[in-house]
Image 1 (spheres, rainbow, N blue to C red):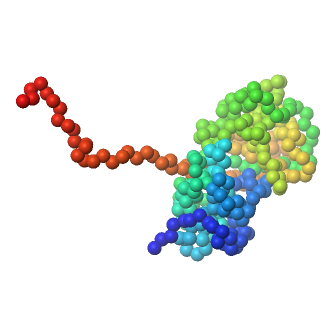
Image 2 (image 1 turned 60 degrees about the vertical axis):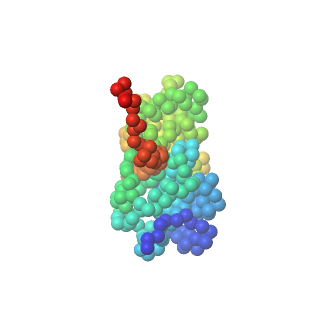
Image 3 (image 1 turned 180 degrees about the horizontal axis):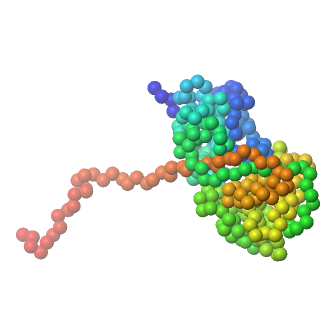
Length: 305
């Protein structure tokens, strides 16, 4: 008799504790800036579905149960697969579909239109995600900026005004493929959005997040800006405080930024695949109509007897 995946309860704390050092992070942003790990995230999920965190275990697989942790962001309308554990159980043949479907059906993720995950393009377990209906919608690299950098000399970054947010949205729309725009919200909508001005016009926009271990930022710059290296230096100078590492995420639509980053001595990560698993939306079911009611009533005619 097969066992369906189930939501974890407080009785599963020993299992979570056993997996605390065996979790695989599938959110590249969280991996570089830090944040809640598998155990702390699961503890939040155990309190209430209203936290937006869901943790599920699949005990049908051979060997140790497979645990997945996901987080839903209602402002963005998407959920992220944060962790899978234990990492030793993941292989190209691992059956992830039941676990993924159980996460998407969890009340904490209700309303999410897709479940996102990041994975190295050469990861041996990537085929398992593909078989669970994850599809690549973009690719990116994370570039770690050097601690020492020259002072910015051209352009400037600042917090946007209302009219500058509109201009940043238009720039983002022009630079981003439609599928990415459908899955990811525009950066100007984020409270941490900043814009880059050149000659009084918005020529760039960036969204950033900071954590206990570092700073993550993804910029969109107009390819026609006068000095891309200076714009990136200015972005680092605007965001960096202290000695925290700063990582710039460059997606394939902005791959031309890799040249300026190389000239700034930034160090790239391995290529990452950004994957999405669309949620199946329930379809309305028509009420069953008795067969007798489906028969058409006889229509009167002029020649009725």
